[in-house]
Image 1 (tube, one colour):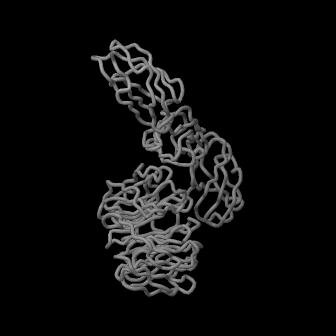
Image 2 (tube, one colour):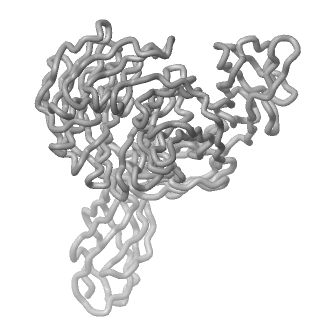
Image 3 (cartoon, helix red, strand yellow):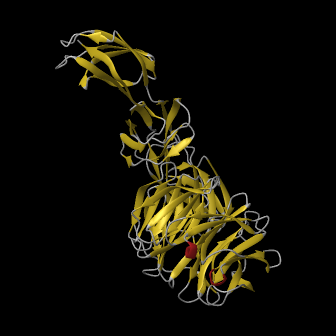
Length: 543
């Protein structure tokens, strides 16, 4: 559902042609690059005013802040460098050379590395932040523009406008491990807090793509976003905000359903946005009128679904909530609630069996509806198919059960994968690769906070060491014993290219019956399992 509301946002003057923004971990300051005036505006979020403007070299574009909040890094497009700003003094303390038309940049979660999209060199440069030097350059297709790092620091996602692709870089080896194609001018990129998904705006495709980081595939899209530029994800992972350059608006997207829930107009060529650590405000850079707008988060309850057994922690966002004395889910009081401030309440859902309004009592007498909550039946996993597969993964696995419509991920051991298709009784997912053979638990995680579990077994490729007896009549019907390894998940046996009846005795032995042959001579024996195929050339001779 998409709605339009009057703009309720302060506008803070910035410099000439502002582009990007970054916020300090404590949420106290926002750094805004001004491409046209070669400066960085520093906004105090408590007063919503610019407290300093730091001059940098020509054409500042991207900006990011170190995890400890002590340094801000600015990509200076015009001088092929990165400026380093001391956030305690707001002074430039270093300039890192060796880049090539840098645009987007991001810092690793531990703060030790800086990754910069050098558009002019078609590469991503890696900077050691201890020495402020470039230590590696990774070729990254044509026209790299923006970069995002996963929360665990293991991968970098790079939007390549010139190649209409997204590259995935392994930070340990500094190599491209995957290239996703089929985009149209991909531009903004952001990772979810849990690292399971990466979100990419398609500037030419008018949509937001959802990438599964386990399989490196696009698993969903949100359409209806005219010329989207930047994207920012809330720290609780429930909402994304997209700057819509095409109609001067900002959309809020529910990341559980991947649907637009609110669109606010009144911006001016919005380019970039950042979310405050408390998720209550969004700072939006207006390139068109050289300001930064402060947009309140949309009112409502997040998440808005949970199990009938209750126990779901719900973040209620709104106005004038500071004197709340009671919270009810329908006619039942919340299991508990905590008033965080005038704009936010944390409440725990009680046990109920239907969807209800959430009401808050303000003071002693005033009650108003502040959101809606949907109760869901507990989910149950009853079966998976197939139950085994190769170490390389890649096959499609189907989960059957009930109450699966709100499935958010399927876990293979500790690896979480976003489903490719979700129905109430069936979920399909691409099997991720594994490093070792053996069983792993398959867990379905749904919005009802319930779990169903089965077992998937990773198997290695089979091998054949002997076939006895090794000769028999062309009439067929001779029993043979096939000995080898990894034979338990055998799906078929052929002798001379003809299907043979078989039975699995153990992981190393199969009993088979030879089919008839057209002529005497040697015949290949082939065993196909869920882990692969093995062939013993001429292992059985028809006489």
